[in-house]
Length: 138
Image 1 (cartoon, rainbow, N blue to C red):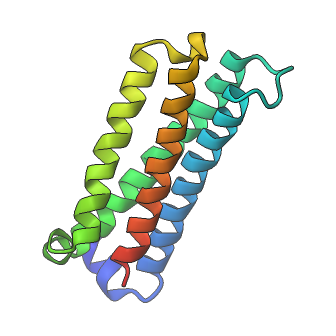
Image 2: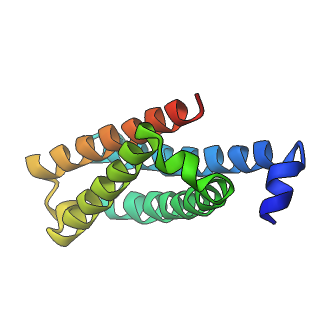
């Protein structure tokens, strides 16, 4: 499979497209949840919005992680020497820690200022991940 990614002209670009779709599902749904946490669409129950958006966001993350792992496998030494890649990996750990903290403290039930800070932090971290991803390509 890795040889096909390296030698077939359309395989790697198709994998990159799958990676971008995963990112879009992840980030788009996190922003939708953030909008609800900040009071938009107040008629919608926050737990219902969270259940839908987080399910789709997790699916997007799985798609992005799987496609990213395949892209990494095609050129691991080059990526490990790339500062933007290393920063991206660190940001992914930070995003995971922030998500764990958000859910562990029951932020969806509280919707307090800390929940809002966590949501803003999540979006900022994920946007930084996207920017690092673009810098890796160049």
